[in-house]
Image (cartoon, rainbow over all chains, first blue to last red; front, side, top):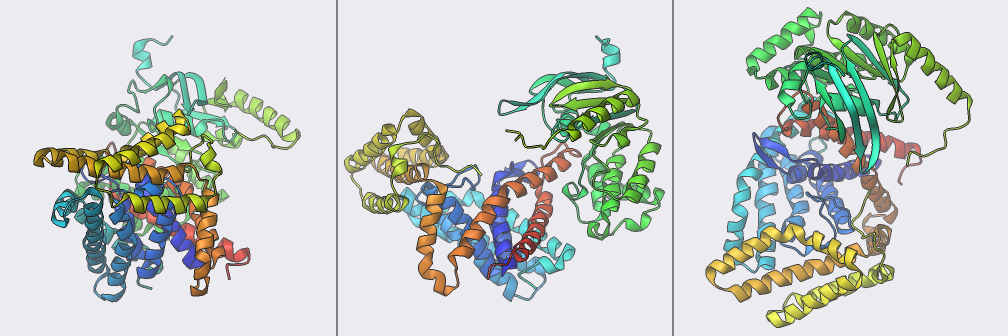
Length: 180
Length: 246
Length: 199
């Protein structure tokens, strides 16, 4: 029980840290915030249930006013703004990513990539686009258009999530709670 | 005032200061360090690590200036990384890669060598130090002292002329400390060693004593050591440490 | 850890958190279906007045909290400028700003522990499903305690990178950061168990 609690808490902290550290280069010269990478990793490393709980905990703390979102944002305002859909999608994205890693018994790298893409991109974008459509008053296809510039960056992030998960499995096999 | 030609070598600190949110951590540090073995001593919180980070260029001064062989370390990263390496206190907070070989090859790759070349140089280095069998090993399989040694090798691989060491012995047990001392003594580079333990600084050419962010003493090891020990004894005999830093 | 609560004390700070949240929910529900620029403008003006009533420093802080929305305002301006539906664009933009500002107002005038108390009250009915309010409180405390620590140590990793490379750190520092989080999780679990555990 304690181990679950601390893993969930520390990964919630990790999502925050990945948003707060100066932008890292995902590929040479292209700075991206690593926060959504953190969401993907919650799923691929902690598994579906714990990963989703870690993300929910993170969102709860953002809601109560901690500036944990990339750029030091937070508070209740972000849940009614244009990125609200993405925020709501975060825990579901982690859940789906974790589910795929847990259930699909292929190599960890492939499973993690599939999970990161399905959860961290497909599922997340569904919610994110719906949210943007509502707040910005655009139709779903129009909102989808607004989301497309981020697709490439997120695909790269999914690749890195897979690489990091696989590296973790190699270096610290017991630590991968999604594949005990 | 040192002549421009002379000032272009060694570590030049002029009125160096660093403050965070208006609070000064270091102030008015001036020295021209050209000796081969230099020590920086002071209590915890005296600003020793900050001084090291300023010299390494990891942070930029908020007043005064620092030059490494005439180069501004915060401004000209590429140039200073070729000349100066830094070893932090805890190896676990500075090893980035999972295997020994990768960790060694990293700095070499950043200096422009190809992956293959960097790996080859890393392996040669390990063999030269009798640790060729470490190449593909996971960092987690190394002991604390071995990891510290790996960090040192990673710095040496980049062939710097100066190495800064932040409390290198603090986390090590006695035999490991002795081993590390032997290795360090044999190095031809200029070493700047930070410590709060005066034992570490015995035999160094020059020692700077930092207190409360300012230079309290600067001179040959023996004299500064004695003064430092006397002050520490005085403080130790006085009463509890109840004052808060803020 | 610093929160987004405004340090400028106002009368709104003294209202109970639960009341503010309920009012926020209600007002947002009223605001969302509005389509007439006049009504929305009035709502916006009311929100601005509410901010200004708390003092200029407070109002300025409120404006700063709205800054991350500027790319979306730009998109709206360009989009609706292009299609010619300027009024609709204004409606969407002003409504968005008003809703966010309203929510931010609650965040800025409510202290962290008051909000956590509300969360715990809301969580109590779920305790039968296995979510003990005590465990929730401990977990929240852990995140608040460890985010700065993890941040600092990740910063050290980034420095170790910068000490050897003039380029910005890449994704390669994320794995060691994850390891730090996992190690901390194990250590803290031990510490919790040593102090009696959570059950």
